[in-house]
Image 1 (cartoon, rainbow, N blue to C red):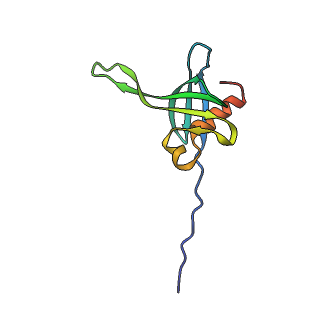
Image 2: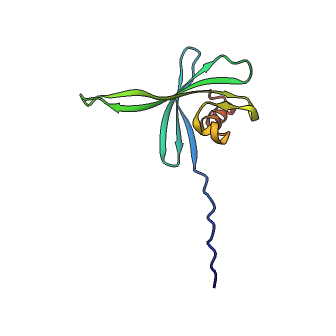
Image 3: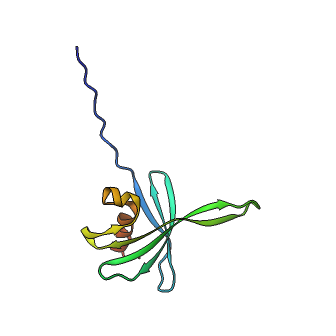
Length: 115
């Protein structure tokens, strides 16, 4: 008697993005991207682009100092361009899969005129 293994359908992780501090002409926005239950905070600022809308995204990470104070550490940074199907991002996820949470999240915020 032979048995076959049931294949599991992969579950797409739940993703959310929210604006913690709005983007201004003179400063950066702060957004939180949540994938499943893991939330990461990013600073987002506009950069010049030949086409589409370009942004520099800096991932922040809280680090505890020896005196027990907290400091925001630049954990990673990416440039991305929002241009519909031709959107790009420098993160490893986009380079491998051609889509990422940064592009999809900022696209959603841009569609709602939040950035």
